[in-house]
Image (cartoon, rainbow, N blue to C red):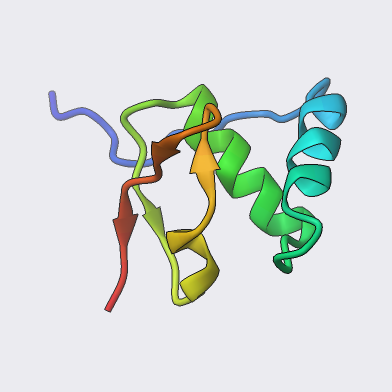
Length: 72
């Protein structure tokens, strides 16, 4: 059987981490949705974020790691 390319992950209980991310990037527009994607990239290390948002080139996961991106 083939493995699924889609994984459903819950961010229940991650509000404190999301708030920290939003505080870290308060000078760069980091929406709640963007913070969720950054946090998901931290909790699912093999993930790649597909985005048109250029700000993701600035955001870092786990403090200093570049987030793998799929961009045009």
